[in-house]
Length: 263
Image (cartoon, rainbow, N blue to C red; front, top):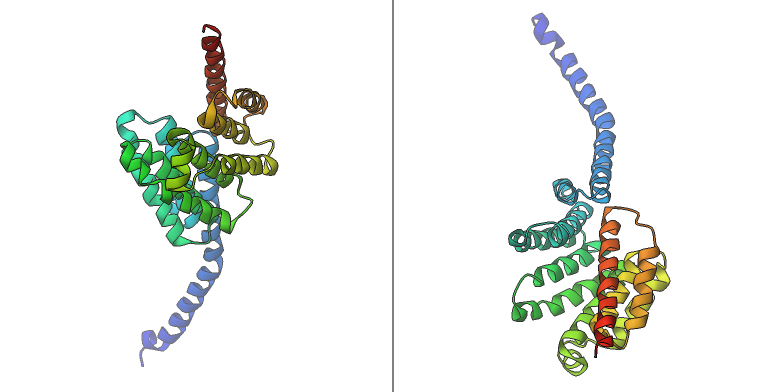
């Protein structure tokens, strides 16, 4: 036996040992890199780099990443993207949210982001097509709440679902066709307010829901809620957007008062 053949088994054993060490030490580092990538996506979102947050989240290939990506893309499409880009971006957000649900059906946020993405997309299509999405939005939102009954944003979404349908169709038609009710809208908003009284989105969405229901009947309560939302500090870029939205909503409400005074 020549020298090379004699040392071959030893070399193979060393190689095997090295691979085992690499597996032991590198695998935890992969987990660290994954955690950092999630953190990077969240940081991009917090800083208002929504399109970048969407790209990072999607690249992770996890339910959490897909859900964050769908949320980021929905925000970017709704508030930042040009009008001609919105529908395509929101369609991709729906696809991402569905991937999040498929990857982990027990992820409440995945179901919520699916509901929100479908809702945002519905705003870019015709009335009849949008109406056909109403049941999907409610189903996904209620799935989120079944998994996590304390998910504040899901209560807000359900409240807006009821209030928008009642406001657009009237109490009788909304209740008969979709099961949407004014009392259920208010109950959802009150639940969100009880769970997160200091979250900027809660009084804002509550106020917008009341305005959709009846901007005359609920005007004073909506005004107080908008002032409350404006008074809360904005913790990230998205909340700064919500702050502007609250200021504009309050301004429109005040203009409605002025218009009423002219009659």
